Length: 136
Image 1 (cartoon, one colour):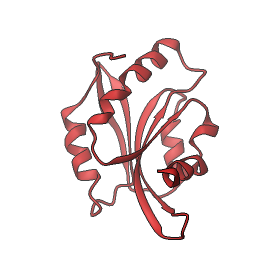
Image 2 (image 1 turned 60 degrees about the vertical axis):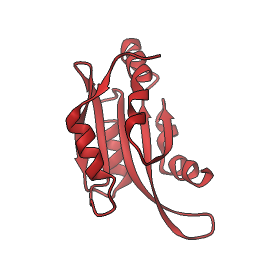
Image 3 (image 1 turned 45 degrees about the vertical axis):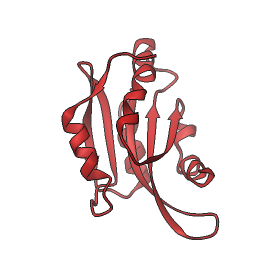
Image 4 (image 1 turned 30 degrees about the vertical axis):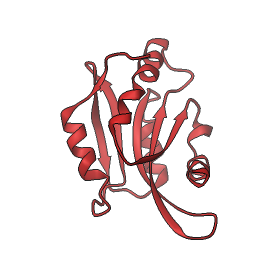
């Protein structure tokens, strides 16, 4: 399902810089405003708790991309770009449909290794994201 929501030009440009390993930013939080997916926040914080607090700031849907550092199954340090769609079960139906139908626009971001869709806080824990990274 397509809703016609597109990525803002500013966000596309920002993502190209964000994904570079030389860029120290750790995550991007995005939301839909006036039919476009726009930047809400970019952060250098490595704290997973900060990331989750920003994603679930007011209980409304958001998109996020995180540089997730983790240890592989054989003990090597790894990092992947993880796309997270936060669409809480208890949210407004209209918002849930808008965010669910618009997440395909994020496919324009190249380099994302893992996609996680969360409707409950238990689906976006660090363990869930790391498990998703080690399966790929």
